[in-house]
Amino acid sequence: MPLQHLLIVAVAAVLAIYGHPMVIVVGTVVLLAASLVVLARLAPDAAKLNSPPVQPPGWVGGGRLIDEAGAERVSQLTAYSLTLFFGSAGLFLALWWMGAALAILAIAGIWIVAWWPSTMRTHNLTTNIDIKRQPADVFAFVSDQRNLLRYWPYHESVEMLTPDPIVRGSQFRARVRLPRSLFNNKEDDLFEAVEEIVGFEPPLRIATRLITGLRPNLAVITFDPTPTGTLLTHSFTMEFSYCTGLLGGMLLGGKGPRVSKATRAVAWARAKEILESETA
Image (cartoon, rainbow, N blue to C red; front, side):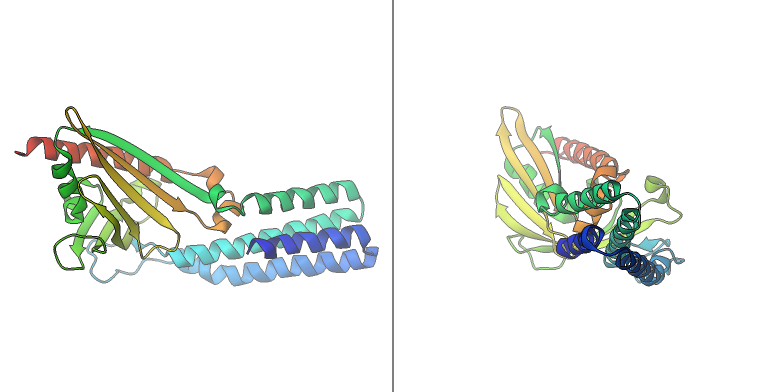
């Protein structure tokens, strides 16, 4: 995908430098028309994302299921439309001011290349907390994701999809309701995912990933012994899509990272309270 965006800008730059004025005009019209065509294709997907929610099967209380695939299609089409628009703008400007035209196209090219490496689009959030219980006790509690209902905010249900005991390869399906007040939405956001244990080293480490997610992700929780109990460290890493970076999502951020950080702080504080109040 980055190559396609870069090719659009490169073609515009070549036409701006070597093209006859009439060729530049035709190129400008073609790129602008292509941008409008992509916008027309984008409209139905965007309308679908914003359409009135339908009661999802199995959910009670209404809300809108998060359509990760649909949102990604909208992002991709939006990114293509913007790249085509900047290509046409650069060509049009080349008719009067070549320096400015090449500057615009160069900036667009640099921006396209900048988000190419996955490291630029990888987000990591790490939290830790001291718990006055032995690592084995904390590990046993945390590794059973059915306990999420006791301490992790917004979870409505968690079920184990694989047989006991919990081991590497165990899977859990969770349903999460994000209240509309979190992001000032008109409806609650509903999310259903299956998480699989991909690393299981009791009582020191557990790793999981959302196998239903579109993007690479990994959560790692370590349980280090301390003089008073256990230092729990939770690290979650996710690689966002190329279009998210291209559209500035990694820089703008929004409320998502802040909400996620606050949610984790509340969750681990509750887990600490539960574990420390129980008899070892």
